[in-house]
Length: 587
Ligand code: ADP
Ligand code: MG
Ligand code: ZN
Image (tube, rainbow, N blue to C red; front, side):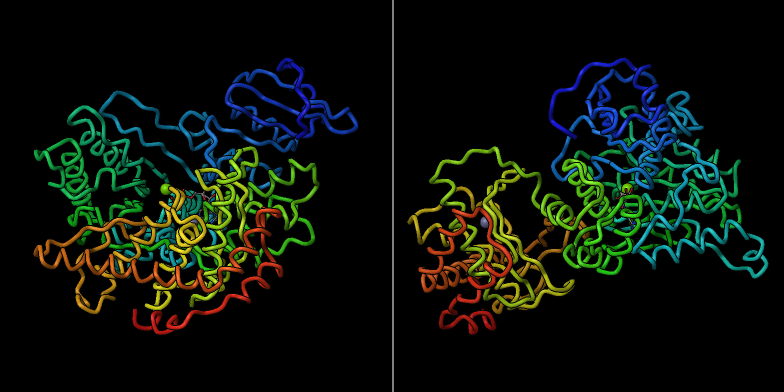
């Protein structure tokens, strides 16, 4: 949209203009609507207060095929699905999202009645509108769940053979991979009632409320069988009992006990299937996984390259794409992105195109969007002192020069000192050439040196370091710690696991095993030694390439960005110090 100021208009006028096809696009903000007229009607911008429900408004806009964006109260930089813009499928997705939120009007058949009653929302067939076709890139999970749908649809067939259908199915996987979406798809496909509730909704301030909500939910399920009960974010109720340091049989434990009792209280032939989802399977009480409860687990993992392509196709299908857009190339550049990130990426790209008043989304929009999603929103307006800018530039070039010689299929593809959100003053983009699942020892050392390269450059140039390296140091320390305590990569300690990952799917964090003080001290020594050696190697490498560090930084300072052939020509000149390969191989 243009930036000239908007004039006031009334809601009825707005509705009339929509109905007469005069409106080009609409932004729905928490407190008002902003809209632009089509070029032939003067392109003027107006705002008007929001009347009635957002749901009615979106229906009106859909009916008249007016593209709209929904601007939430708080804009988080990498906001997952923060904004939605489009005219086709994405609008559909938004309307659905509204239906699903309790405040969005729409379907909510089961309203909250009394405190003890379950707040479960019931969705009948087709009410969610989401089908398996909307969930991409997680084929194995889909296949397993298809079976559940089949059972509910053809229960008789299974009962005749005497096949036992699992009572409880647990969807596990990192945040944003589509677990909730899968559950909604089942609701859409199965053709049976779908009772959905989030784990956090069970847990309330008052003791006993959670337990009675569980009881109520299952009573309703049994009355409506065959049906599906879906408990999202099960970890909110399902944490290991006795993990509360204050002790006692707290509210959450009572709720969990009630859930276990209910799950034992009906048999597989009753036609009730309990589906649950969690990002943190390792925190669940083991009792939940016993036979007869959540005895089947379905992994909803991060998508691989072809999975990412499929997801991009789903989300891009409602967006008009320019001819140069190569979704496969985008999929290749986004390893580690989950479905939610990719949905967000498509939105960002569409917004970018709209901002430039383009009719279609171009590859350049996607490129920019990838960086946005990775690094947060661009903030060209932030003012750095010249010294700060220099420090950032040397720092980033330091990362890049060290990274250029390290093994592991990472190519440094871009260095930027354009400040971005969330405190990143500059960044160096390393694009992996393929998805990696295993980290080899030499690659791990290479990553440590690359992480410490920024700080090393500052030391060499300024003789002192800034606070800008704190995140790098944090990451490097975590990595070195894992190498020693989990991967068994330290020679003196050997292949002993001193820690187990505390969150399988969330970054960072580990629970140390109890060790003798001597071993604990040795761990600390090993972690420090690993880091010191990587740091020393980064320093040696950069001292050897001092001239290149200087010239590349000067170019970066004038251009703000280094990428493409120009960057590759610079990186090709990096000389390897003696002993590099030896250190990479042996530490
Ligand atoms: P989870 O419950 O695993 O944290 P969600 O199901 O809430 O993730 O996913 C959030 C959004 O991200 C979805 O509404 C959808 O738009 C998008 N998304 C996530 N995974 C996928 C996928 N596999 N296919 C298509 N879209 C996806
Ligand atoms: Mg979810
Ligand atoms: Zn850094």
